[in-house]
Length: 79
Image 1 (cartoon, rainbow, N blue to C red):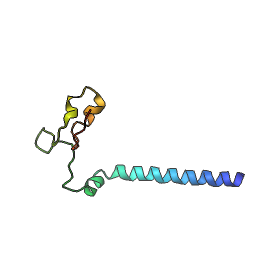
Image 2: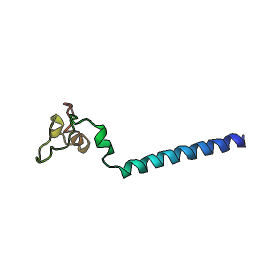
Image 3: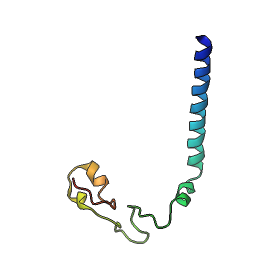
Image 4: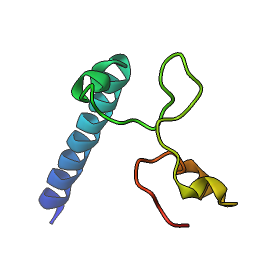
């Protein structure tokens, strides 16, 4: 039983190390995710040079802060 526990601890430590190194690697390359997205992707962020969002759905009239987070999604959500 102790041998299995030791192997499990090593496996868990290895998985945590891989996850941590992946997070560090992703943090070092801030533009890496931008290249993976298509230029035609429809982000909810305002276009460069303007202060307007591409999309505004009916959640913009909601009172909930959570629903307001999604007020600029391209999907026309109902509150």
